[in-house]
Amino acid sequence: MLRPPLRQWRRVQPGGDHVEQSVTGQPGERRADGRAERSRQSRVKIADAVLSLLDEGESQFPADRVAERAGVSRRLVFHHYADMSQLVETAIARRLEQLMEQTRPLPTDGPRAGRVTALTEQRARILEWITPAQLALMRLEQNGDRIREVTRQVLDFARGRLAEVFGEELDRLPAERRTEVLYGLDAVTTWGAWYHWRSSGLSVEASTRTMATAVHALLASTDSSEPAERA
Image (cartoon, rainbow, N blue to C red):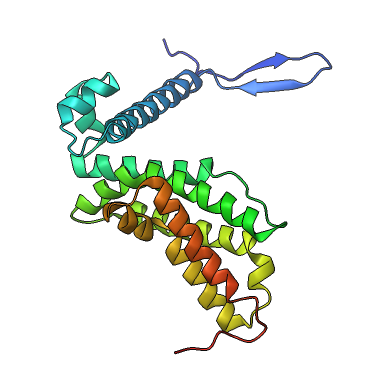
């Protein structure tokens, strides 16, 4: 005996509106959504385990240690990541994204000395915090597209923040000279300069003062209406 095909049913809501809903499909969709969310959470947990080891000063990330720190099996690590290089790259990209999320607004007006102090103290904290991830990044044989994209976003974000904080000084300059000074400020407030000072033996405090000295020197060149004379 042939059975009639499954039909849609109607539920009448108050007010007389009809809501049609298929008797099939939705439970399966919910299960799929649940699996996708659990998978996402596992990936984040594993990447955060790498960052936790980084923050403790580790420079190597064996799969067994990462799995133990994440509270998952070694097999699950390689289910989500093709190899450890991909995992480390994902973790570092996550740290760079965290950097932008955690950067607080800075004053854009008021005395120059106060703005320089606020910026250099914030940059010092961030650059010291990001150093383990940057060193791990240097050890990767090749940086993937995500790392390159996030790094570009971080650098653009940092340069844009400089333009806001020191807009009063930069806006006095002709366009070409403004760009030169802005990129000079960028050079002395990003990780390359910080790592140079720290690896040369300067303390965090001394490196922060050195950064402030460089920033003040560049901004002083804007005090004259004429571009600084070149040697």
